[in-house]
Length: 220
Image 1 (cartoon, rainbow, N blue to C red):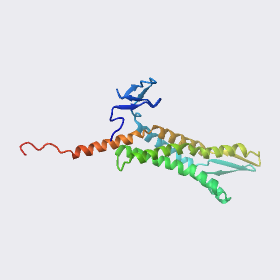
Image 2 (image 1 turned 135 degrees about the horizontal axis):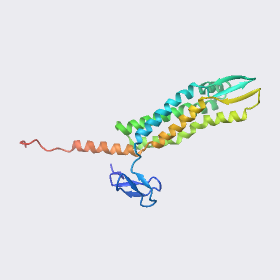
Image 3 (image 1 turned 90 degrees about the vertical axis):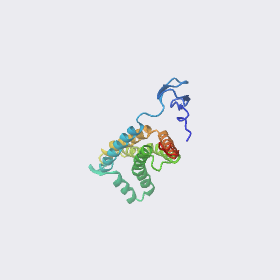
Image 4 (image 1 turned 90 degrees about the horizontal axis):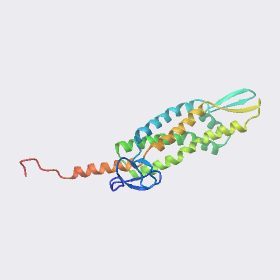
């Protein structure tokens, strides 16, 4: 497999100038910025951020994300219970949007990044073209999880009728925001070029195994 790395070339991440590889840490010939050929400790950082996001995702769904006060009596609402209330009131499109943005997208991104780290590390059933596209989809979907935070912030601002009815943000909003931010950090830490590097390494190994070796001494 022909790659820029195999040809002794490297791309500057700042100005996208293709440079001749001099060392792992070098200066770009156009913008003069220092850069590495690959993101340093990419898989380790991605895994660490992703695990932190998964840990924060648990209390984000267990704790109330907002508290609705009616006549001074507070009623807690988690993400799932809030979705259930939208369904009870027949607001199915809103329920689907909230469920997708608050549950499906974060879980898909966390699980997807775990899969990409595993593929880049082991190379098992690795398809760099498809997995690279999958990574870019995850990177695009990540910020949309903040939709739930936006909805809660909007309700806190708009639904303010004093003692009659008011809405306050619950403790889960902090954990959910942390989850979204950590998944964005995890996606940014992952270097999809490692998928192609692993594929190239696997092909080189297979090629070397197919190449006939020298005959044992005293034979042939």
